[in-house]
Image (cartoon, rainbow, N blue to C red; front, side, top):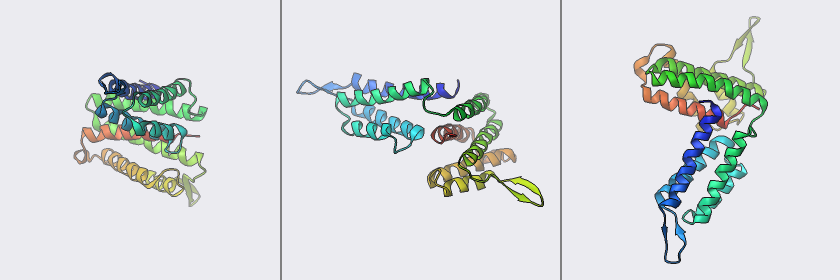
Length: 225
């Protein structure tokens, strides 16, 4: 499953929640449909999370989805939310959300993440953690380069690359992403370092699975331009 397919899979889940909210909703005394509250909350939160990861909080899709779902029990608002998510699906399927450079990077990273996913399924959590961490570090480097942030320094006539923690700090300082994302990246880098140095009892498979999800969402949200 490649990068875009994973996004489409997530979209299908979100739309399913919206449709379920309508399917199991009930007609009120006025004959209009009141959507199921629990499924609607799932639709709203998963939809907002997805749009936030993909476009950011200031994008029109995010603001519009948040607005229409503010009165979420009404059928027309749920349908409007589903339409917004479907519009995003069209953009992804047609490759309209990224530049050529980011598409190439995404496909390369997707290949490595897919290999890491297979390793996890085979219970090779340590190798998976190292591979996922490598994808994250390389994405940090690409983000630095695309935003004209130094990725190395000179010492005794030699070019020495900055460590991932330094790049993470510089990206947050330059407000490419916020402090919360910086802390998330730091946690994943710590896990990768434990795996790389043989500290295998410091983490478990579930944490590596969460690491996988974090990195996938991170490179989706902060694409290379």
